[in-house]
Image (spheres, one colour):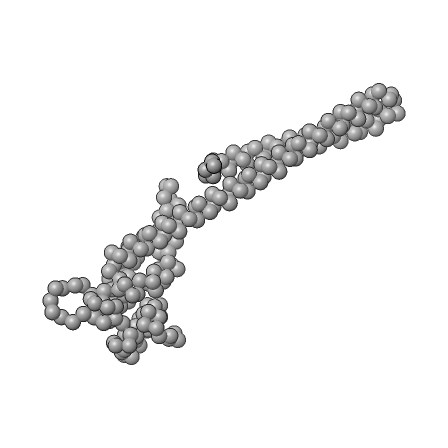
Length: 220
């Protein structure tokens, strides 16, 4: 079994050029058919032999037109298929690049494991991937996704998502995300209404994500 063809933009451009040529040829053949039929009608009143010859020419012109229409239909189908497959490939590559970039930034940012799904969803909703020089550049606003995520996690609004740094000492770990995790004010064992109110005011999106991770529904 042969492997499916992978289409490129060059393939689609070539198909479009072929379609343009076939369309032009069809227009010529339509004109030929009309002319041949007109001449056949005129010849009918002049000479039977000439009339038959003109009828044959008209039939051949119509047959050529039918073949050309068939070729044009096939070319259009191939073009549509190629365009759809190329767009599908681009979407898959765009999605892969975006997810890989966001996942890498989250790993570097030491996000609390339990909060990763919510944090990833929040970030992915803001991120976009654009093709630049043959590669997808993932950005959020006017920054690269990695720079944006790092700046967010380093700031006051994002600190609730960061796991506490491991320090080898005997201090008790934060209880929001497991051992070494940051405190989640919505979690059952660290429930703190004052901290909740502060977080909701500072960053409603982060507050909603933390609440969801703790199994709590809040109205913002």
